[in-house]
Image (cartoon, rainbow, N blue to C red; front, side, top):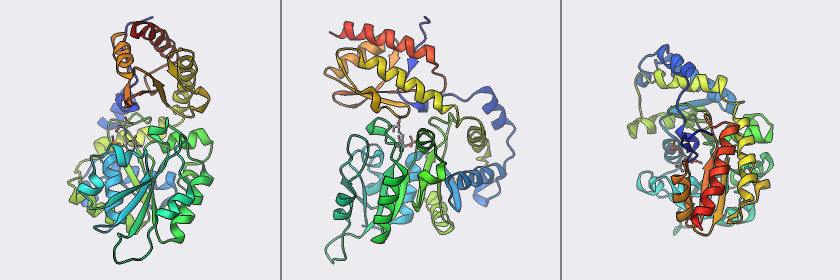
Length: 345
Ligand code: TLP
């Protein structure tokens, strides 16, 4: 057993492979603000095709993608509905309010990341001089804070239909939507369904160093392009980084099944540790969140034994499997996790 530190804080910690770096080195580039970078264009075409949308835009991060979706779908002082555990609500520095001048209104996410359509409908505001206009419903798939839960095609469709009946647009924060498609065994375009826009990240399970795509119809992408420029996100010879994304879409999608399998082994192993509260059969993708009474102490003990994780709540720890973490590493994590549990008592 090696003494290598096993970093399970996030699937964002991956470093590009030699082949991916070669693709970046060899990328054909141009000035993308003039729309002249062939590699960025190629990536955007691939993204539009795989999500089943008309067009796509390369942006620097998942957070920027969500912010651009808010700016492009909403007017100043509008309201967007999102889940109570949504990334946009918890981890995007309040950009909805701070930058887009949009208030977020939360509907309860259940433990599997789902929203109750009746609750969502009750939160959509009717026309009234006193109230903000509800212009957007933001969904998330897979659901980060709900242990990487996958939202079904049917649930997404029901919410899209409901929102559209009320004239409300739908954006899917699909930072890990490839994980969802893989877990469901359906084409990504089906997972994106009739949502008006969808974002996905290259820098998570797909293993690219940087970048996300937002996808939607031509009018949305024109507006998104303008908003990206306003945010200072217009990039010049961005083909250097887009090339990593092209390579990732061609070579890294299927391998994420290994991350899912490793997460299951990890979850079943962790669940055997008496101080850990985890239902391993609920783990569907690459995120394992569990409860433990002394989360701070346990995280410290894990770190001392060479396993890094994050703390999504006062009594919750998160481990994420990713490219670079092999099946044998999971066995090492479990040996260390058992040891750390004894050390933390
Ligand atoms: N999530 C990160 C942290 O911010 C928590 C992680 O390590 O999981 N949507 C979802 C669902 C995300 O999980 C993330 C990143 C984002 C958006 C933001 O993406 P970036 O980090 O590229 O801005």
